[in-house]
Length: 264
Image (tube, rainbow, N blue to C red):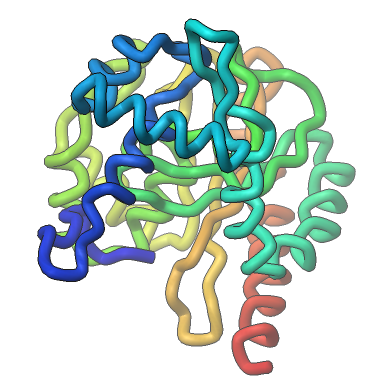
């Protein structure tokens, strides 16, 4: 995973038009699934003429469609995300392990990687809906207040963790959310030391989550695996006592698969 949150500075090898095209794609979201040309230009920081050229190019390639007024992404855009997942076949190998874990403990499980100040879901095996917002592959959440995020941050040096926390918007999502960078760093250090992480209702009221690292043959944390439960059914202490052992066992199994894959 990247060791810094600072992107490379534009130079001779920097293709500005390509970067602008990615900004246009990234401007689409659940809050803005359809955009007019003016809205697109405003959201991506481009001129109307520049946004129009990029949109028409994406339309010609089949990634964007329009009704004559507003633009939206097509299903073909999923090819870009699938390219990442298909280039990492470990997730196909790990899925049976995660499914067996979910079947055993009757709680939802997810795997995620770190991207800047966020985590990005690369696998999810749900049992039932436990969050207000549904999550799927590609969903993003802040790293600082999630068990997956803190476990992934634990794989970095303290200096790198501080840099990511400085770049994060540490706003309270619930009355339990930790927003002091020094306190979050302490929790990250604790997760690093003990090899697992528990976050109690910091992301969403009623949601408790446990996470464990997934490491490669060199011992580097490349992803994290979690189990999520509801506070009104299971307390944090009970989750730690009953769910942590099977979670750690599943994480070890997947890490072993990573090690074999890396040495192949």
